[in-house]
Length: 286
Length: 116
Image (cartoon, rainbow over all chains, first blue to last red; front, side, top):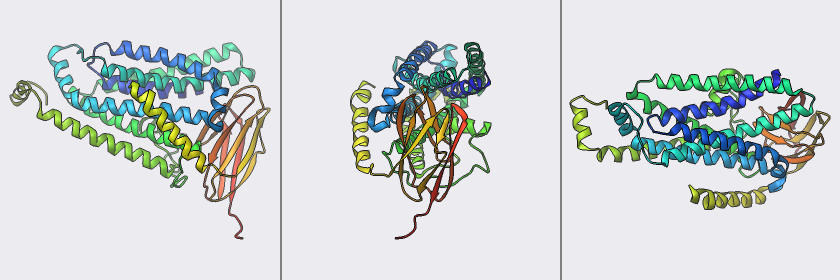
């Protein structure tokens, strides 16, 4: 039971933190809950499919199918998160202003909603397939159904609880700073996922490592410790990073950051005059 | 989004596979998982060389070959083989384990090659 609880907790935590952050970052967008729920359902279906065909996937692409699939899912999440962040750089401020003025969520069309669903799907699918395979392994190793079920429920609840706490914590940030904080969180998260994708592509033999284990910061912050794992999920902390991971991490970080600045600035120029006037007289938060 | 999934992504993947197969002349080393143990539990690899470890799972159920030391992680389904590229490694001992059953532990030992 204990082993099941620990593994399920670890995987659920990773998906829950990612979902909390994007859910927070799209605050004010109407109907986002429904799209996230759809992403979770599709993700669970995807996870079961991946687990069921694990042997086929593992045997494909010269026995490197699985790291390639993981890298693919991660890169899809990286692209979607980057796009989401750039979209928010353009619309986040207007959104915050409108939410405050109207007092309820805003219809924005389906673009950020599709992104939300894709990100949720990717997170649930990747972590979920590992849970299924792990439960299969311990079931074959003699664990009883009751043990697995109770362990999984404990892990699922504990992992989701941390996600809810993070979401609550995010919401307590004043609206003025809110989208600034969430866009930084997403930026770090995206860079971390890109670095993880690089590790999988290197593991599959497709990319050079450019130096494996360039440094080892395990003594300062062990990646297996609780804060180390949390920082790994949220910002891609790796105690022994390879060169290619650093390249992917910083390219993503700088690339998305630059695009956000460019898009965000072009938005400021075209801001409706009424909003600028309202800000000038202090009626609306800047 | 559709264009990304239908066109761009497969093209990137195909490109990577092509350049990967050009690179893939690394020496191969076999590792077997049987009765929830690694055999051998210690594998020797030449230092500063990229090697391909072929992990064969002879049990009926999945295992996960994982190494924090080499940041590798891959599920090995029952009765199948996966390949894991490691290195080039500096000389030293690198731990790996089955993340689905931590009783199974092993080490990659990387030693400098005698100069010819």
